Image 1 (cartoon, rainbow, N blue to C red):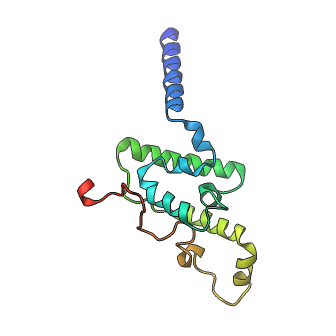
Image 2 (cartoon, rainbow, N blue to C red):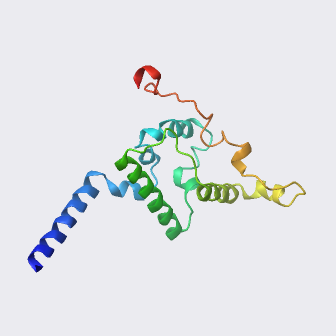
Image 3 (spheres, rainbow, N blue to C red):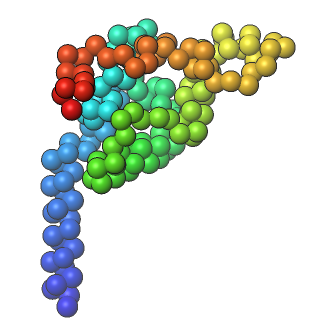
Length: 158
């Protein structure tokens, strides 16, 4: 019984190790935006960011994850779990839409980076009841729905 359990655990460790190596798992722990573009769903978003005004100052994680160490990796782990299960089960959406928790993180990061500008709005009589990107939706990723990729999906390519 112990031999079978030991062999099973060893086999599981080997399979996990090979899987982590083959998928270049450690790349997902970093901040390189090209890693976020590994899934075709992100092509237009990545291209939009690459050609938009925020590229010189931000990477994906600057806007889409908390900046504190533990919360950042908790968000990355949750996102990674959703991405892997979508890929494994073939439930990849045509477009990824932010959940409410993601919207809150982006909002907090907008305010963190643009604190001086936003302070005027927060301190004013004007209602502060919308997300920054409700009005500034093209700032980080360019125009929505446009892709400058030569291999953009079209009806004839599907």
